[in-house]
Image (cartoon, one colour):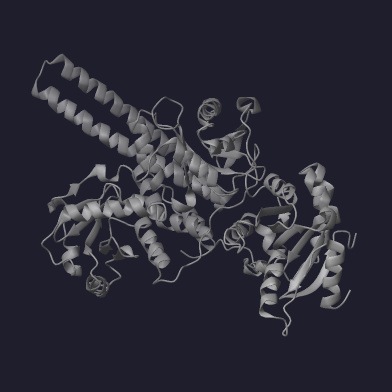
Length: 431
Length: 195
């Protein structure tokens, strides 16, 4: 994928093959026919190519290379049925193929979330020349003897409390999640969540909903939710009812000890929408009494916690913009466990998307404490003239946002150009 | 203040941070110490993404909304579903490539950001397809119950089973029709807002 959502990985790399597979599965259509190649033990795994845009046997050279390396390789055609299920046509060993595919999907679904699209895939043996475009186009699903093995796929994605807590625990402010909320009894959790970014066509959600409803849950309400700047969750949807908030709180109270991430729901709000507007907001702090929401990464609350924990030589990553919701926004993150910024780089990229005006003013780098606990910001950003004003505003508004930020009134910024110090600034400069 | 050495001395004196620099004549281990010290001071920050030079694009979202706005009102539920089906691939690409990322809390009376409204349509469409599948399944159940009752006329339990299946089926149909009407109304409002 390209654009703001994800960077495009090189086409031939494992990441490139995963991106191509993701795209092929997300956009699969029953109007198309496909060639596929499946090597369960190779880095590529499953490769799918649209027939209409490919030459006959486009995957033959790859198959030859893999076979010469002694890899087990399956190939053939893929069709999509009326219910969007994948149907693989092979020339032999359908049972072995389906077992291998399900096992491979199970091992890789956390890395390639759209592999849920393979759940309940069918397999059929065809005597046609499956390398030939004409033969694949001529395949008639109604004439094929299709085998499905639902049990092979049952553990691919489970509707359970741990799954809901895991999505919630990893959610980032501004990241959209699909939700399904049910108030009645059943074995499955009454709240199911999936990030929109990995489930744009709602496919993983549908899988979870089917399982939850199979366990006795009612039809439920759906919509999107997100963590907002203050760290609480806002559910948005046309059918939200106040009663749902209370049954959700009761469920969280029951499971939060075993699944602490559920505490992120504390203080959540239900926004009933209509005609593109928020028609009503339901929130009730009393419903959540005793369930304390932990600071959420990417919020000022979490930054204050990180800042308060700085001591000695320890530093932290910082990302600062004046384009926050009510003025400056400062994101602080762990440096010790992320010395190369591998986690902080995507976090910064998310911040740029989250705050639309930040491309004009954001500054990032490392923050540490100097003598007497003086905050020292170090950066390579070329444009930092606005930094003192941002610091002063954070310090002035500390009472309203985070008291710990009062220290920024005496902060210093060291700007590097390569390995040379270009200039230093004080928060008081220009005041 | 001028000169790197003077600056480093100032940093060491005022801030209590020692800046070590790798001089050409310094022993190799000094370079390592230097790298570590500079790393603490943020040289590693060079690896962070630089500020983009412009705001993110919304070309795909704009195109999708434009296309949706230009569609004629669908007179039949089937046509409305077909319209959504045709927009689906573009919707998926817009969601992936231009994800909604704002985190501002909304209050009563606030407009939904247009990408969020778009997601709401995606969600409603998915719900509708789910209800349709339920209806289809219940139709098949009702048909089977009807066939069974026809095969053994006068069997009270079969007639009752058929009546139950028929009621469930009608309920599912009503659910679908309500959802379709609601989707059509909301879609009309969205198209109007877009134009």
